[in-house]
Length: 213
Image (cartoon, rainbow, N blue to C red):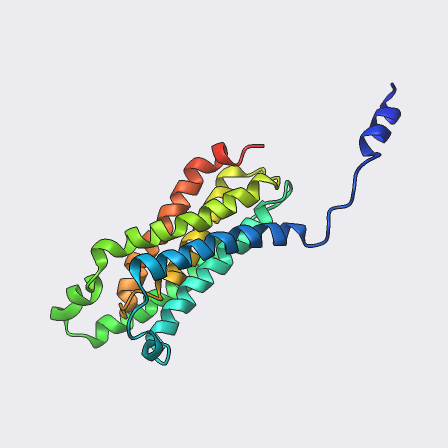
């Protein structure tokens, strides 16, 4: 068989990839994992008892703005890196914007608060478990994204794993807000960010092994 015949035989049964197949695949993985995380928040941690009141306050939406913006950047980076020729572009660099924005708000909080209260504002009532909870809640979403990547074709495996970890951590933190009563921007900037960094580090370390195809 000559080269032309071989190429023709290989291409004979090829079918075009459905439009938006990549987005649907990633979305299915994230939504499936997100539902598990939501069930964990409701059944394990429990919704905060004043949730309906909190929804009318600015601090709740500030936390969500932070976590959702990080999640969007991580998800967009993951979607780009899921392709063989994918490049992360500026999406991971854009993570700096919400971090700097929240850091500015935290700085204003410190200026407006007596220094004797800074430690309490930083630690809140749940600093010892916050990052751990965010990390654990991210795991189902991270698993869903890894499942999605197994049917895709990433080539920058460490970066793809990192972006999946950021997305999973940030979406997990978003759902954790339904439980967490903390209101300080300094608290969120520190302990939420550490919880999100955990799955990102795991993705960076394990991506080259788990995403190999």
